Length: 120
Length: 110
Image (cartoon, rainbow over all chains, first blue to last red; front, side, top):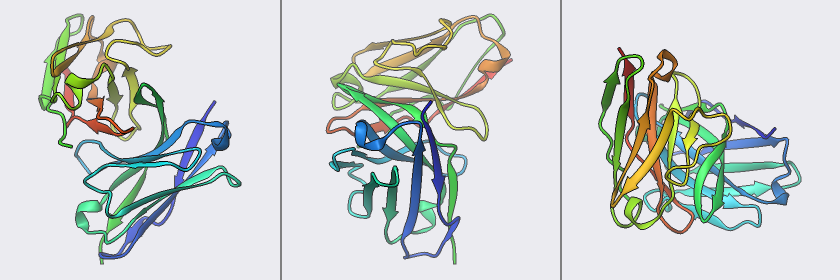
């Protein structure tokens, strides 16, 4: 059974960089699939951030592309999110997830989510 | 890419059927047969209920069904049960391995 677990600081200052890591168990990232991030501001809907293929190719939401970097560390079976120049609008529960992309994409595995708050 | 449009709320009595719509554009919903639906209970991660417009993952009751016409997709929940009360989100493939989500619909079982 594939399991994903987010980790990282719960509080980030405005204009700084939000960094989160997702640790995957039950499946080797290097074996395949995309690995991605989705966020949900408190009381609001889901927003796709982007994903990375096991080979390292990345795909980002155009609205966040200038501030986002997703990377993978196959040796640790982890992938990471960096979101630069954060503001209060970036406060959200951040989910790591596995998009199953066979033609189209849908999310078949989700982490439990971690709340990241942007505040001074 | 803009968020897909869903009604903010829907409701039905136990045993009834309810349909939730999801409207996009020809660049997402209308352009691909890759719409998925997610159920989210409070404080929990979403769970996929429908993918590729009308396919159900193993373990999802056949009370849940999906369809699409043009730029609008729909999720129908038949035989409503109390445990179906949750937020539902649609999502569509938007090209280049990107996804776009809807704003969510709160389903209330009366």
